[in-house]
Image (cartoon, rainbow over all chains, first blue to last red):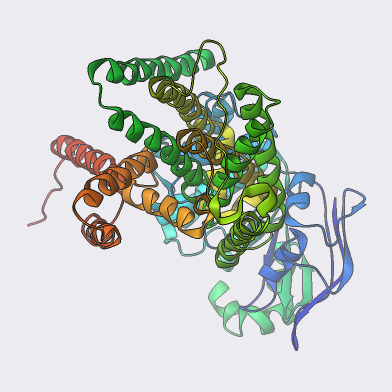
Length: 251
Length: 335
């Protein structure tokens, strides 16, 4: 489905992504973990066209999409949500989602119909319900709570019916309760839609609870990959990322 | 459903037209009609500029260039004597739209401040072409010899009442079209670009194409405003394409408000009425205008119509809160 081969990107002297090769199976749910500055977000930016790699290839569905810009990548079916909710501040929740659905259906340029009466609204309302945002339908994005902003951010990406969905720290900045609600939501989303879902996460509990496979990035390199159980007991990972105390805490 | 809303706009526009058409029957004062035509020309100019400034988030400082292009090309076409007024009108729209599209293709590659500066640069290029191509444009004397206004469909634009009605009619059609644009999926896509260009791109919006389309439409409507002006003064002058014209457009948007659709029109009315009133008493029009803008910027912190509309909305919202509050159960205070 999504194949990354020897991907490298450096900024000045810092190698943010160093010879990363990863393979994501169709309909898989995988997590990317790693300490701060491990190059996780850079890795996402390379895939979604925000950044051009120095070398290496990205193969999506048999097609080489290396160096494609954001627009082209999105149209191929790779959607993403952002670490800091990236919204349209003056749009209400319903307007934001309707606009995204219209864009996905290539109906954004229509001039003779009313935005408030387009058929795409039905789909927007469906997505709103999936994310439990229907009570916020008329609230402008900048007035939403932090948690709802993050939900809307993911909902926008989902409005494009992506085949691969990249979530950059979906639970960043959330309280414990909100966090678990978000995680349940993501898991349910993946179960229902069966897209290839890749998420970046800091919280080990979350990663080990839902991910099928875990990839550990450290200093831009792949340190380890495997099932959550293997990662938990991998001595390199424990040393580099989880810390010496992790085993004690885990017990 | 779709047809209904469009019909509704048209009916409203028609009613407004009936009211405006009644004015020349009530009064013989031609100066009121002149002010009306000025408002049509400048209002359309400001409304079209706001498609860029308020809707797309593109601060163009070269909009006067298309206003002048409309006035000059219409005047020149009429002077050839080969075209009827409707034909020259249509040809001018096509010409100005093409010109705007061409300018847009270059400008939209640049962002924010650079975009503003390059639009200003294009405007000054047009201005200098008008000044130096004397054989065609008459240079700083303006388009000489007047514009012939042959009668068409029983409409005689030499007659001030006919001209006034003609301008009001076309103006209202343009307002309905512009309103439809802002309410359409296209208009909302422009707003997406204004609010968050990067995210729009990540949602599959071909941002630059939309910017070009927005710029082209805005330019075409500004060109129509220029044609009103050319008909009104029966000529065209380089000042139409000077940078102060673009500046006036920005002032109108600031005075009237950029978030409410009709805000720029209100701004145009304020600016024109202010001009008419102050020039009776003093030559220091700029001073008065400056003070008024200061009052708006420091006092209201937004345009007049935005101030009113947003004020009403906020008041309503706070009233809603008050009515909802009692229904919320009070939290038990632990003792």
